[in-house]
Image (cartoon, rainbow, N blue to C red; front, side, top):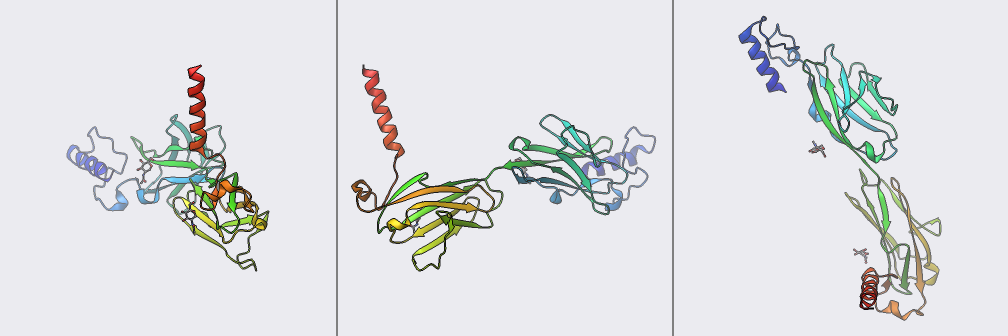
Length: 274
Ligand SMILES: *[C@@H]1O[C@H](CO)[C@@H](O)[C@H](O)[C@H]1NC(C)=O
Ligand SMILES: *[C@@H]1O[C@H](CO)[C@@H](O)[C@H](O)[C@H]1NC(C)=O
């Protein structure tokens, strides 16, 4: 943009005030001091945004040298004019534009965003012709899973290793806690041997480790991330009565998918032959 305005300025200088270039941006002054160069976007402060489903999303557009022009927000998907200045122009009242005096920021708030609100939004300045800056809004819904849910079978005496995975979270969950039968797990309890390891990142994983599992450790275990849904796995600590579990180094998952698929293809094959 800077280069374009500069070019317009030069053209104007060559053609003089009677020329056909209609530069809205103070044609009498070709001094390229930042203050004199017409409106432009501060790109570094006007970035893509990731927001959570249902939690207000705020897109920010920082405009320098706005002067008496107005700032509008346009949704690209349907080229819908959402706001002009601080007025909402759409019947969808979830879109609210704000400007705080003595700041250069024009914000578009999307209340109760849904996944379908994801897409490109453009902040436009009413120069002639208008100039715009586009930003991408991603509305995401974090998903929590526990490996092995809904049911897990573990041998008595082995280590119970419960793995909770949180995906699509715009930031790692600030906190994750575990409960056993609805009681928060106390890592300093006399039982001992209970620990948790959390690895935060784009995908956050929390491992709950219970050494020397006993039948009393059976029950429902729930992983509670502070910014995502909770997930429960029911753990059965087998008292040696389930020989199949012995073959799996302590952990056995019922409904092993490759086996189910194999069985299904076998049945399909047999059916086909008849
Ligand atoms: C903003 O999002 C768009 C679409 O996902 C992407 O193409 C662009 O590179 C992103 N810009 C920045 C600065 O991350
Ligand atoms: C727990 O299981 C995960 C896989 O779900 C594995 O990566 C991790 O090393 C295990 N931790 C221990 C201490 O066994």
